[in-house]
Image (cartoon, rainbow, N blue to C red; front, side):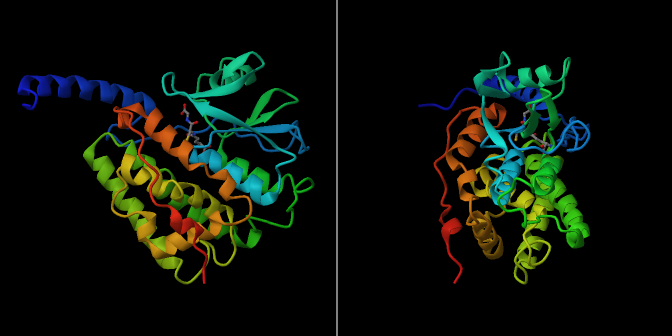
Length: 319
Ligand SMILES: N[C@@H](CCC(=O)N[C@@H](CS)C(=O)NCC(=O)O)C(=O)O
C-alpha cells in the first residue's frame, strides 16, 4: 500500500488546520500570542443577604470529569455535607458540546438552558461546578475557588465534620500564595499546554508547569502538605488536577516531561489525599478518560479512548 499522494496530504492538512483553528478558538479563546485565556466566572455571590445557609436548599451541579467541579465534591465529602447539599450529575455531550441534564428540570434539558432559566438573557459559558438555590431558582456561584470556601465555612451547622477547617486563618497567606502559583502553572497550566494554539505558548506553559511540579515534589520531602502539616483548600485544588495528570494531561494535553508516578513525593501526596475518607468515591477514572478523550474533539479527532494507565500507586500505604 502506497502512502497518500502529496496533493491529498497538502489539501487535508490545509483544510484540517483551518477547521482546527476555528474550533479551538471557540473551545479555548486565545490571546494574540495563541495563549489560552480562561474566561472569568460570572456568578460570584456569597452566602449572605438573600442566600442564607440552610440544609437541603442548595444544589451542586457537577460533572465527574471536571477538575474544578471535583474540588467541590472533595470538600463536600471531607466536611460531611452529603445529606445537606444535593449533587446533580450532568453529562458531557460530545456532539452539541456543553453539559446535559439526566432529567429535565424547570423545562430545561441542558445546563445552558438552566443557566438562562436562572438568569434571563445569560450568554456566558455554562460551566460546572454551579451552586444553585432551589428557593429563588437562581445561581449563587459558579466559581469553584469560591464554592469550596463556602462549603468549608458556611455549612458548619449541618456538617458531620464542622471541626475540619480547610482554611485556617493562620495559614491564609500561605494558602493564597500557593493558590496563585498552582492556578496559573498547574490547574490552568495543564489547559495552557493542551489548548495552546502556538508552539511558543505551549513551550512556555510546559516549562512553568514542570517547574512548579518539581518545586512541590521537593517541598513534600520535608512536609506533608503545601502549607505544612495541615491539609488545606490549596491541597484540594492541586489534588484534582494531579489525579487527572497521568490519565489525561500527560498525553492528551502534551504535559509529557514526567508523569506523577515518576515523582516519588507527589505520588505519596496524591495517594494520601486519595485515601482520606470519602475522597476515592469522588474519583471516576473511566468517565474522566471518556469525557476528555471523547468530548474534546479537536484534540482527539479519531475518538479512540485510551485504556486506563497504571494508577496502582494511589492505593499504596505508607510504611
Ligand atoms: N473557573 C471555573 C472553571 C469551570 C470550568 O471551566 N468548567 C468546565 C468543565 S472542566 C466547563 O463546565 N466548561 C463548559 C464550557 O466552558 O462551556 C471554576 O473554577 O469553577
